[in-house]
Image 1 (cartoon, rainbow, N blue to C red):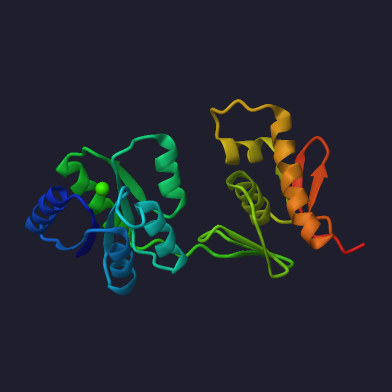
Image 2 (cartoon, protein in one colour; image 1 turned 45 degrees about the horizontal axis):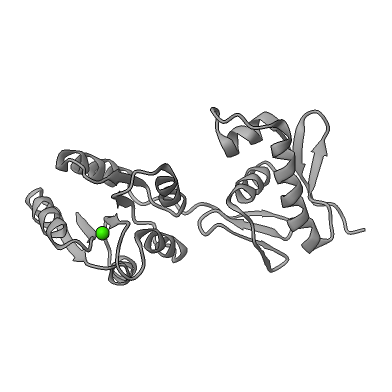
Length: 226
Ligand code: CA
């Protein structure tokens, strides 16, 4: 099994390199973001261990660019920061798992084994409704060839509605998809986000896409131009 280790701290890189090779892995080390990205794209690795804080481009950007280029190699992020937004950001950008420094070597080995068992992530299918296209891998949305600029929340809402195009998405289900179980949000928060999403999509197309089903939720369906 071949591992790519992207880590700029020399001592950390050496320790991990040696420890992992003793476990039978073949390890290649990249010391900065650019070389990590280059090696990750050009060579065949079974897994990438990716530090977040790197010179050049950081680990988030490396993960994002790898996924944009269709590289599906599992990525385990090594983050010195355990702040939830960092972890969420890493996972959103295409990392498969994360480990917060300092970590135990045994835990690292267990995570590596788990990711190797799973193998490369399947390419998520692009979604299409009429001339509206959404790519879950790159987080891009195109409408009639024009790229839409959506916030993270708007993107999640649109993806959810597109996966159930033609069906009604109940309000509770939408709220849970975006904000999770625990989050107490005002009922009209969902409506405010839907309104903004609607404006962005419908201003471009001049057609109605997101329809309110009164008392139930929302549904995505393209209406004919007026
Ligand atoms: Ca670092």
